[in-house]
Image (cartoon, rainbow, N blue to C red; front, side, top):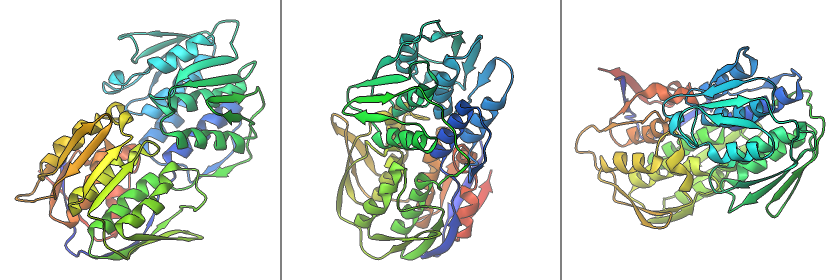
Length: 409
């Protein structure tokens, strides 16, 4: 198994990083471009493996589609293929076959799609047949499982004969991602109305002349973590905007609590360590669950007692991120325990009695979130190439900031 050693000997940090385009924005732009049947240019498109997989699937010929590990890609392609003529198979990796898709399939079938399970009920792979002659204009879906199901329905809605009324049952998780999809649809000239729990999208022509993708705020979180664990410094992160469509842009406000200030500039953001972290911290990450591992590692490294809510979706990500955090934080003497319904307590401060080896569970965010601990002590990261899922240049960019990244046996 491949493994790297990560360490930064000088505890102050200074440098400039050009962040890749947002994977979330890129995937939505690609889907809407394909649905509009045009071929305009998208600037700063994410180079992530997930996005490149989506590019390949949207361009391929044939009837077998393999999304690999890419969960967003699988969910978006399920809706994209649901109302096409012919029979297609949509599959993925072994982990993908463990990730639920039933709520989206039920919703699509209820409006006229013809989707069957090839192996286990409610899970990939899928057989997607020619849709029914009559397509309904209204659908009900549970919003508490994944916002990506809602986004998938939003994007195909303008292309359906009667448009679509999406009625969301239960509380909508990760609401900013749904808002992002609606804003992207608006950029394609698509009108929509979202009131209370109902999204109404009429049938309409969507198109765009070209757009530029903002850089990735989720990726920015790892640099905030580096500054939080450092002895001070400053980093310029290029490509980020103040008026962002990305929910993870809440980082700029959240990280003030950890003593890090954000200055918005024309070319990006300038982040600087200016104060001390808190002794105690509590946060609800329902709208930005991809920040959970980063914030947990910051608190572990600094010995901050922390309470987390809004983590219900973490168990169905690339891995069960709750279990993964419990296992890996435990290696450095930190506990991450459930103390109530969807409420977790992090306690203890990272202790490095030896060089710990952190497993990544085929989860890119486990690798990237734990890497900043190399500021406190040399660490090992297993399967480091997993970062290609969202941020292939991550290790090179850490080297720009003075981290030593060395492959070991």
